[in-house]
Image (cartoon, rainbow, N blue to C red; front, side):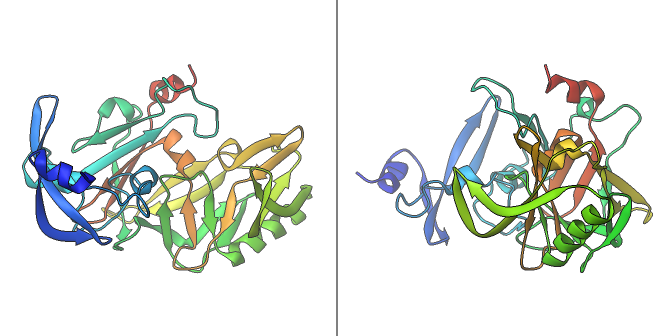
Length: 294
């Protein structure tokens, strides 16, 4: 018996719709003291077996995306808002199998995760079905104390990679800034598992103490003031060897000019509203951050 027939025999029913060519089922699920109907799919072993492992259920910003747990919980009145809040811990470090690597809050924020005296800011957003976009003030970021002009105002968020995606133009400007600040660097082919990646270069430096924080000023929706995201060198570099640190920048062709890697979830508490594409952000509480280093 194949997996789809098993789903039907277990009390699930096909909706008659498909996503990515795969039938969509619906069934009643029990989660602690909550019960709700949830849409789901059975992956095609040949093509989509690992699809769910790569993207969180809120990884797509389309509220019409049928196979969404968040939408189902909202539609059936189990959560107040179709919003998911995320934190991650020790993204660039080796983690034990029984270690808590992050936290997901659905529907309502966990105020203990927000720094004392801070409030969630709703960022001015750009509606897009595939990404969550915030708007960068003056289309720029700060790197090594100098403004880096972006070709668009769009800043997106990555859930599954520590790499900060940048345009080719921004990449070359960063290299220029390294030269002007007399920071020794090396450009070479990026390697994964000791194999070179075609058409992918990496920048490495011997010392990160000369690097400075990257600052990204995002515009708040309420009053057009800015919320400054600070990315420390330890968050955008990875130690490869003694006196060798990779800068976690990756060039990207397309509508994305600057994409924040998932190391920002170590220091910021960020929510994503699947209904309207809005992004909410606040600094994480100091206690919450310290717990990831215990």
